[in-house]
View 1 (tube, rainbow, N blue to C red):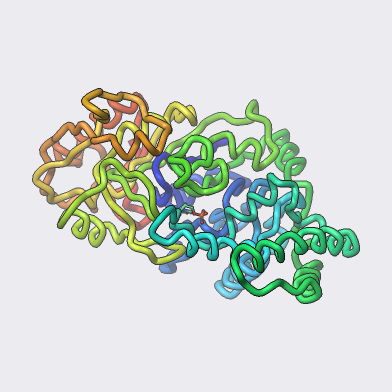
View 2 (tube, rainbow, N blue to C red):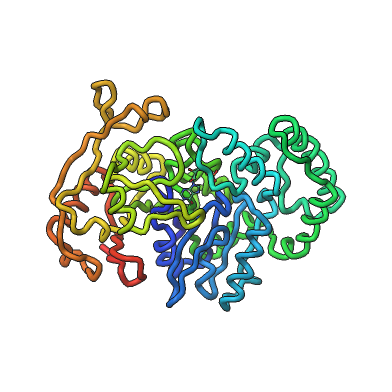
Length: 424
Ligand code: IMP
């Protein structure tokens, strides 16, 4: 069974926990887009791991992990994560493969990410993670990127870098008034990664094809979420990769005919970190209440996340774009104790009801949610193990989400621990 796991909101849905559950039933786990802007939190035994770049399946002994061609790799971040895992006793060598076609993040990508964000202050800041993700993908599309495999041939690598640095230095000095980069220093730094990085590489697309033919089960671990997808998200307040299902195909070099199931992950409410439209965002004390109860602080940047009611309009959009066949609902326990819970089932714009997600930022910021209000539940649900044990109003809430999304809910998470997971 080859499955793709997708975030169906603005990221941070709790994918790490579901990947951990599904990784046990898989042989190979693949990251296919994004970079170290992601943060997948997994509680493993008594330890808590936050993985930014390496698939969280690495925590399961014997599983093979792949970083596909669609991922952008910051070598420093990669080595740091390998070191952290090895220090914790996780064997990495021989179990982790990196695509030679994956693009590398360079210090100038991080520098440009930061400079661009700062120069836009109070105007059009995206609120990026400043990890250099956007500028690296921009270079990839502009055919100015440098790939992991380019390190195989030092002379070729140097020629590529020299060509890129000429343009970057124009940009840095003339547009941003920053210091120019030293070609010699950067080239030496990246060539010093050569052996260590190339030791992990292989033709990952071919590897995955052959694994699938041998009947191995592959899990595709999505990062970020559908509403952060550069095409299908709240553009321009998005990340620079395809976080929806198409990204898995392109970013791993695997045919869609090999995919059996696409699973969506959502929170029982909504969060987003960074700027951009968010129709169901809370105001006043509800924001603090849910943020603190749900520990809604970014796992990569530590920034407080914005919180709001469940938005069925955006999730229905994600169900359609990704062809989600089933859903996992995370953090339902955070909503316990509220007198009422709300679900946005449509938007209202200039007096008109919109049932479908509008793509334009101009329209989205003018949309008001049309809420359906339901009674809340007061009971603590963190110990619930079976459907029958959920309070009546929590069951009604889940059933209503299923109706609105026209998709079955198969997993409900009621706490951060592995055993706080209810399979329906
Ligand atoms: P970038 O990916 O660093 O360019 O940031 C672009 C937008 O995506 C910003 O709003 C970030 O906060 C958001 N973002 C990037 N990665 C994640 C993630 O893993 N979870 C949630 N939001 C993210």
